[in-house]
Image 1: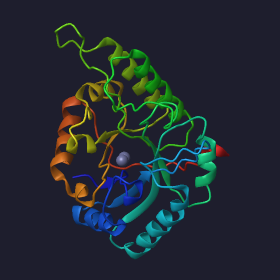
Image 2 (image 1 turned 60 degrees about the vertical axis):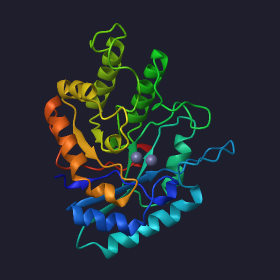
Image 3 (image 1 turned 90 degrees about the vertical axis):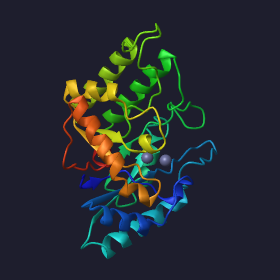
Length: 269
Ligand SMILES: [Zn+2]
Ligand SMILES: [Zn+2]
């Protein structure tokens, strides 16, 4: 059983459900000591683009206030942290930090779902055999980690690139290996923990990946489990947690038992 989970969404992102309180009560029932909320961050796009997968800028206030109230109400049962899951979009990132700095935000996690920008970029979770997309993913993740604004990297193995060579064998794809090694080495250098993402299990996605975490195991990265809950009952999914623990064991990674949060605003100073 894990004691902390920092990857939790709310209904505000339009693809999660349940009241904020239901997530808190599920987490208490599951025995978590810490529950971190990290809903998809509202991004200040300046081209009029309106995202359908994240809260609006105007909803930030209500999100933070709801979690502050719940933190106070449930303070004897659980430690609630307030965060966001954010992509690193270079063009808009300083505007994002400026917007968030008006609120008591404990942490950000990096979840690089799109290249360059959500409106013009491509979704990294879509299957591709294009090595340029693989490299773009790793470049953008490293640049994001280097900002110093993030506490950890969510689903580092999101990129959906073939793991084996296209020659009828099961030989690992050398390009995948070398790019993921580059990512893990950068994470190690920057002391950035990597997440085994449980949402991949419930949706049968291409992650979490054994090959990826065996590279992380070799390099000695810090690794933790994140529920990525889009529904309160996912916090009670002991089966997926067990699966992730088994994966960690197979890949030779040891799971962290406590995460130290990094203020997103330290790097701005
Ligand atoms: Zn989501
Ligand atoms: Zn998420």
